[in-house]
Image 1 (cartoon, helix red, strand yellow):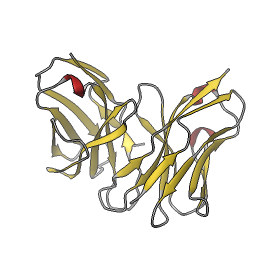
Image 2: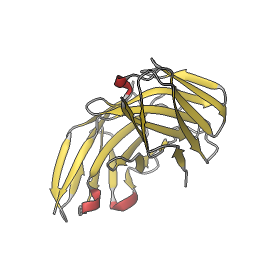
Image 3: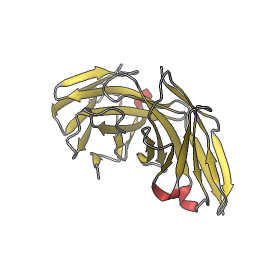
Image 4: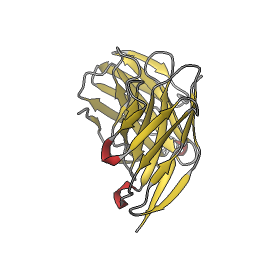
Length: 114
Length: 114
């Protein structure tokens, strides 16, 4: 089974801090994704990566950056955390070389910015 | 562009009665489709996927879905609800472009009454 592991289940940070959310997958997937999930707004794509050191902006990249130095690890960075970034963050991964592969999700990180 | 519409934001059933969660899709071609389940404070788990091999797809935990091209539907069903089925369910369609991006439905919250 695919395992996607997010480093923290719950995280509390202060405004202005630089925040790192880590995600690791163990199935050699090419694609990795970061989403945020908010009540009434559903899941929104922040960034995704289709290979090491490659990244693409999703629908809401403002205030975020990402890093993919190794294939199995995809990090989301909040450059200067703000209260409107309080949310549930979900990481996912998928295969690339065949069409229509499902994404596999981690358990999420519930981030609170005070 | 591909899209999905989940027709009910909330569904309530009694334990032991059938479950029906509705999803309609819009696509210029015959798409793949997925159903995911999300339990409180957890990530999304793949329930089942349709990839054109068979129109009736069986998934985990007794769920199944039938792809009906004439009705552009992919409804999720289960003959007998269990308390552990209480969760939010998402219908998902892949994008036609690369990178395995997807579009999520808005979700249906299933309540199971004892």
